[in-house]
Length: 374
Image 1 (cartoon, rainbow, N blue to C red):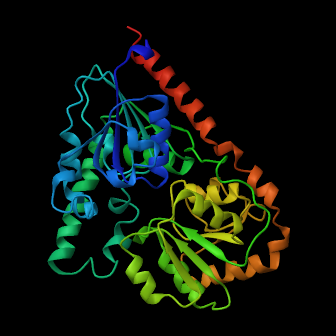
Image 2: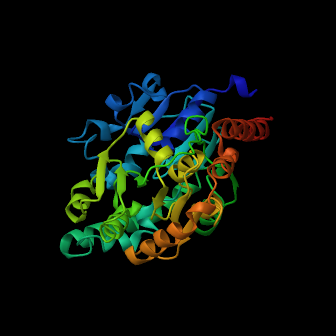
């Protein structure tokens, strides 16, 4: 029965980089189907698996600066995702980190959602987002509060449109239960462990790799390493925080910008350690670093606790502060000889892309058999 089902994939934003797009690539490989998304950066997809996908975008794509400044249109995301007409499909597979799970489906359609996280800015990052460089002040502050209040209400209501949830970590599963009062099955996202390969020879630098947005907390890393001028930090990635980060960085902090996959792999392989200050629901980049045999120094909260093994594949710092990071780096200096690259690399085989695709395929097959048994 499953092979006869007409399938659609719904994904928030197709930007060509990041863990969510990597997951989308695997879902698309298993179920070659049209991809409905708010916005797609087509120019950046040409050399990727998604470059040949049948991508259908919302009205966000056509708005002024809809591609370059897509984050500014967050208040319109719920409306935009609800405009997709999916009535012709039997099976809807959403990959959601903002609003994709809110796509409207009928009673005779099966909707399975792979949830990367609930809307961060509306929930656990709400106060941090408000306090970020004046967002809480004046008319702008009142507007942001109103928008995020609406987003919270919509987020909970739209969860009822999903028949089955898949969580990307136990941490996310707990949030699904807390916020939506729903059960979920944990399937860790795919990591290209065959691309990020073991390299035992290391150079004398630390690395961070992520989108340069506020909740990644790269600012804390930059402040910490600026206070340690004898240690070099390489920052890979691009985003709206780049100019600010450069303004607070010392000469020992080097910004690479967005890097092609081959270059990023090389930098990760040669780094002494990967540093990670965000609270993530899973965190693919640290796992990619460990696949290279590179230990991870990370903030001790979120999905990272499910991937990094203290004193074996990395170290944790307890607070999102420069001082806490400095203490962790100094501790790593004392213990670095105890970390074995081969052991670190082997620890992440359980997160391979092949494993994800098999588990996801099996889950969808099971649920479609139940739903369409009549």
